[in-house]
Length: 256
Image: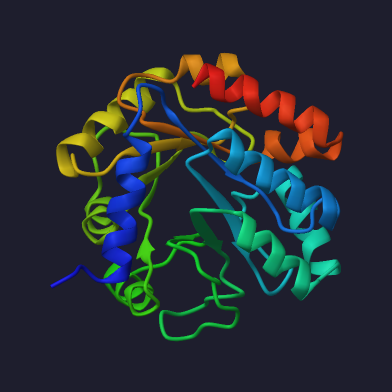
């Protein structure tokens, strides 16, 4: 019997992240930002250049957690002010492997979807939610998997973090700061968290996020980090034009 769609997608993405000699690179991009033609061209360029996956937001109202920094908040505000269903479909069709970052306004409870995460393989909750088992089961019902999200900090794992890891799949999203665009965890803290995750779920690759903006930042990541996810810096470069974004992206991929 074949594996359920969500399980198969999780295994495929996990293998893709760990498949090469370099760290994988994922990007958080916002459909329609800074405009639809540039946005579609950017996601196509990212997939062609070899990014492992693209994250995109699923959001219904201009509310988000304190973890959202100013750059991503600006892009989300633009998305909400300029909805375009046709452009969104074009963007998603070009995005390749997709992970939806789902905000509470779009998915406030496991059984209450307000906006579907169209074709996303993985679902990453932007808001803190109890009972990961229920959310993971709801994700599986949509043919997707729940990405476990942790924050680098104290060494070891709390019972809540073990619960999240136990019901997650695909890869572990490890935030290295308090807000997007901000890396404030020390190298030892990141390394300790990576070791704890590896001991608990050696089957899952770990992608570090928050505050990664340059090739030098990628080179500072400790061993055990299988991939990096960049959002704020990607959007900032894209604001300055597609050529600027593409040049930066190739430098990041080379450094990975």
